[in-house]
Length: 343
Image 1 (tube, rainbow, N blue to C red):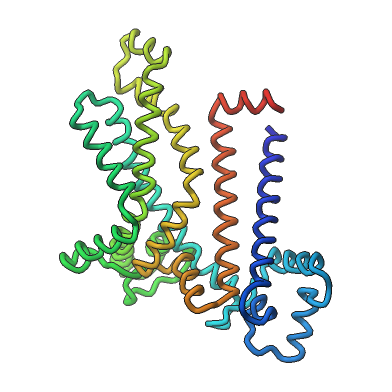
Image 2: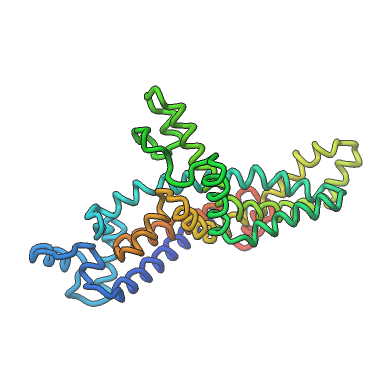
């Protein structure tokens, strides 16, 4: 297992190195002054020019420049935003928790709704129930996320007025950040209006979370159904039924835990698409996360924000993909057997 973890760590480092190399090459191709693309400083003074040249080794070869670029980015120096004149790293730290919070709530909704429906679709003998569930998943998978977000906003936000359609919380509430996750910070706040603030934060996250959860929900339903159909035909399941165990116990104790293994694997494979959807959702609902921040930087041609956003999102996707792969290997006996057989 140690050798396997070392291989995964090497994969993470190698992939991250290639990513930073691509960003380095892209930065040199930006249609602006190279020093501005690297640092975000509009009109640097002669002292700043000398410092930038020394930091990024601009008077040396490409290999030396890439080494310096790598050192600066890994040390947390992502430059300053050309729009706000604030360090990009500070802005990134401010917007990351909102994205994690939205993604976490959407993932929980997708799992809580998708797994039971997938099990129902596999066990139900009613053809109408089966076809209805699969039709729902196919429809959800086919709907463009931007159309779904705008439609939900129009129906539940504008027409019915049930839910807010923009932002993370009403500006009337002043919540001191503690963890960065607003749903938690509202409960930790010592304000007398903390429950009202928490309720308002929940109402704000409902529409964007539902919109973002639709894609993983449809995948979870289909994968769970396929896995359950296969597992219910296994010999040990039939033996448990022959011993007189109730169907509910067989499903919960034996079939479902094994069916969740491919669900975990496929959730790791769709992280890239999930992140792309999250960016669109954040823009539609004005959610103050990395996606909206990055898209705003693209519109404003804020090149340091673009680099910082792409680097952070890509590194998070790479890390989570490898982490899910390690978790899948750790809990899946077949994967462990194959791992030891090839080591």
